[in-house]
Image (cartoon, rainbow, N blue to C red):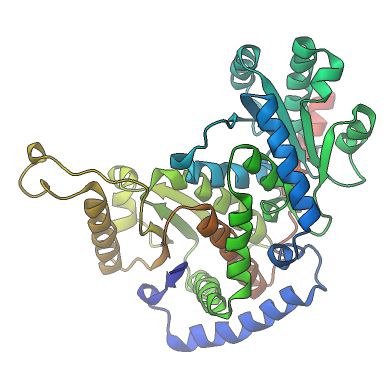
Length: 413
Ligand code: PA5
């Protein structure tokens, strides 16, 4: 059983689906042609360099031997994929692996000061990840944390505890790698940040944290190599496109297992940055259910009709508990997962009855293998919808505007 998509509750006319599917085939052909820029991720799972994989695994082992705390420094596509996978696998932590913390994904002095205190107490390694090697947030965090490492271990020993993933040639970080001799990996030139989780960007910290990265890649490869999944990805990509044409502006990713919190964050970046351009795109949002039914449920049921829902439904959660008699006759003797499943069905039925389109994605289980499938699946659907919209899924020209404004204000300070 693999990832399955159900778009039947979207009420998209069969004709519109058919027309979209025909166009999506053309988009897929272009993706696989290898001629488009930044599509290196398409063949990556099947063509992953085995030597690189071995080197990542060996380096991860060294990190595990060196530290109890690994700080992953990066922002956007340089950290969200790692956090998504690790959080989803939180129930499967592996003994002997370092705890993972994240830095450089915001500019909070308070949060970084707390982290410095923790670094004082625990043996630490840093893994700094930046494709450009020039991003403000990660550069600031790296500068501060590296100084702390030098104070604690001395310059040479600190360098032996710093790992970098960056562009092969360009950027200040690559220059520093050369000067300081950090162990380093490349971000492939033809893969953009938000599509890079299955490169060393995600694989190095994930392997150090004890995730079976071979399984992750095997899942992605199974997805890429199976003609059946094409239909699932195409249907989802086309449904999203047609819902946008029908006036929907917001896609709400809903998950009933809190472990999916950062997968939803990764999805928001993937879709938001890939599609939101030229006045087009769906605004990606996320809700944790059933928690957010008690805050946003009202809006979903009766608010502005701008929303459609995509339910991320885990079929076999990691654990379950029986409900005791004290919870009342209706619930006693059932399990939490049973009630959670009923909540999924009830919410879909109630929202569908109110006219809200609902897409359902069934995920067999939260394992490295299925997460590999999911990552590849969403990367592909995103490229399909963006292709149908006629926007470039792989650039982010709009991100530059605030950066330029920041530079201007910084130089005035
Ligand atoms: O998807 C993208 O390209 C971006 O979100 C980047 O990942 C993010 O801006 C971080 O960039 P960098 O890896 O160059 O530090």
